[in-house]
Image (cartoon, rainbow, N blue to C red; front, side, top):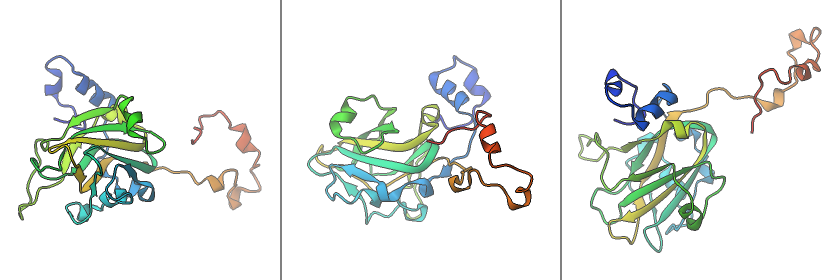
Amino acid sequence: MSCADDLTADDLTNNVTTEVLERVTAGEGSNTNLWGQIDKDNVTGLNLEDVSSAPKVIKTWDDRLDEESYVESGVDDDLILHIPFISSLRLRTLLLHPPAPGHPHRPGRIRLFANIPNCPDFSDLESMTPIMDIDISSPPNGTRRLPDGRREIEEWGLKVQKLANVFSVTLYFSEAETSLRSSMFYVGFKGDPKTHTMDMSKLGQVPAQNAADKKIDEVADKKGSGYTTIR
């Protein structure tokens, strides 16, 4: 059971766990594919065999199983991907298409960090505590095969409460089977995209039909009446 699942009566029959508490406070929400919310031009990485390859794993859903384009680590199996979003999001699921279990280039561990402004160095991440530290040496329960025999994308449930307002994710892959290379074909996310945006160019403007009755200065009078500063 992932922390993105809805609560059931069974969750409350025993002692309330940290997982359940996180799901209660996270609330209900959608689990939309967030491909369109990723700032693809600014996806970067460290220790890449091809330094420009990081955006190649940000694929559409239809191309998720394509293995012609991928990222691969360079001098060892440590690999960082830094993925910014075009607005803040609530993340619920991490989508991965790694090499098959037992493949020498399948990373066995992923550490997930959030809201780091720019792609960090390895030494930076080693001194930080990740939001999640996941053993991905084997697919999660429920990963299925398609009729043509291909493995479907792996869906890893996330700690929603701790990822409720995210503008970037940094993924640190390591511990490949051979400890020489890590590879990844696809990275994606599901969660809640922002549905309300503000056109900053229209602040202070008055609709033409009301221009005779309204004063632009009234915008200033509403300061402190519940507006939220956008950062």
